[in-house]
Image 1 (cartoon, helix red, strand yellow):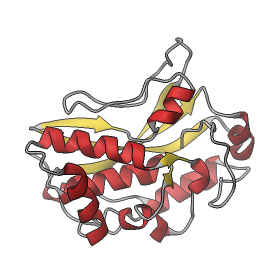
Image 2 (image 1 turned 135 degrees about the horizontal axis):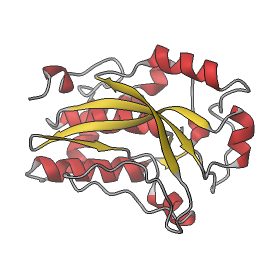
Image 3 (image 1 turned 120 degrees about the vertical axis):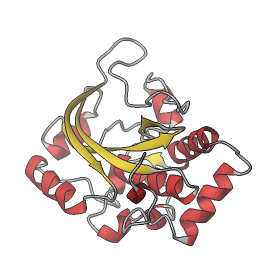
Image 4 (image 1 turned 180 degrees about the horizontal axis):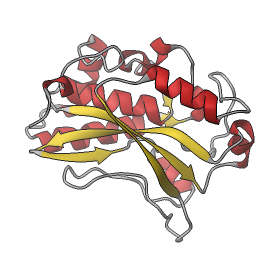
Length: 218
């Protein structure tokens, strides 16, 4: 049985905001089961936002689900926040999870910007579906995956949908290095502190241009 906080609105996971509620109900439509609602929401969040690490903003208000929904680009953390909030808005217990990862297909441009190939606080969501906990990351939209030969993640409501260790050609893709834990709300201060600690050369900022074929896990 989940903790009641998995359904409660929070500062960042503002599942009671009209914009979040409207998005969630529009996506779910007449879906009758938790599994169907979860899979629809996962796919909608994955595709609604083009994955873009340069959409990062240090402004806390920019990481509220209701604020994120006003844009068409996002990186993994805000996409996880939106999925978590939308799930709660339609009665699916959910919380945020984070891990440090190495992306072996990361672009040279972003490696230069960050000064490391370790990407801290990759965001995903833990959903309770039919009594079981399922992990899912809606980070990479299908167009980006297809361009780089990485299988598109799909959520079936039963199995975890986490980033794959290898691409379609067997090259190393994503390596999970460190578990950062699960949270009912976004641990904003901890994320910013980790960014300052690990990204010694800087952090991609909102408004910087990114190429349409940029590959980055953040």
